[in-house]
Image (cartoon, rainbow, N blue to C red; front, side, top):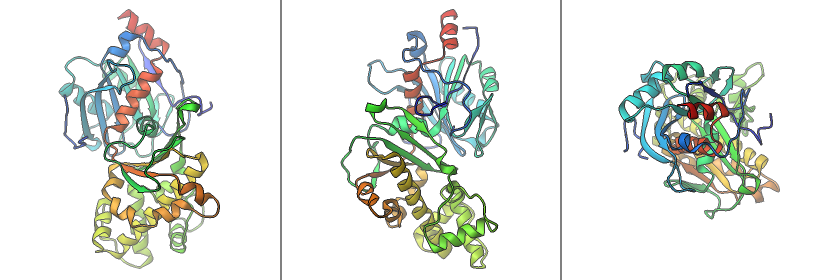
Length: 381
């Protein structure tokens, strides 16, 4: 299956047919794909019904009750929205049902999920998921007619591909928006990336497994870190360094290299200590994180010629903007030689994750419609 033409999509159906605070409410990377269907004109009855859109990460799930816009060309309407901590629920069905019980006035029969990982048979496979996600179990336990799945960064690509979102901050490069492919990257519990093609190429979003690429050290210290993590050689993914857990891994490794005991236990503690310059290993770990992120982003920007810009998404990066701004990110992003002239014209923005994932998932769902089985079910109901 050509990822330039198809989308990570799984559908199960029956024949019975930001303020991004944790409790705030308002009135799959790569792999095997089971089903890829594009229907540009979903039936009006299905499109008009409110549906769930969920952006499910390793730590938080952002859930919204959505409805198709009344005016063509506008964004889907957000009827209700919450950010929920995954650890507070036994599974995805319990999390989504909690949202439905508190925020949906009527029953919901359709759902689109933006998830890291990929679909194999009935399961969304993801190393960072807090619990297994089995699509048939989810559909049956919530009495859903239809569940669609797309990659989480594919969803972000649809939401962020039309220019800087409100609250975005320019990290480097020119502020003027240009046309072309757009790259979305997000280090969080894992490391995701997707590319949105320009409108002239169809405006499709390509999900990637870029976070699983081999880490390439760009300094002597990073070579020492890599040797510590893989003393006998072998595979070390970028995600092992450039993510929240990766920052903590680097910090612990640097402490070990200095013969010291780590005293910080979370990525947030590491970034706070680095900002306060109260822990030398935390400062160095953040420096390596930012520099490595720059190399990673620059390499992907070169690969996809992303003249439309690069978006670094997520609250994790947004909260450490000052550290990024004063790091080696830009120098490492620019790389060297002739490609530097190209990369210097690529704007890099840092943006909050916020509701972008659920909005992008909803846009994708409405744009590509529902499978034929769901169409038939909707006419029988």
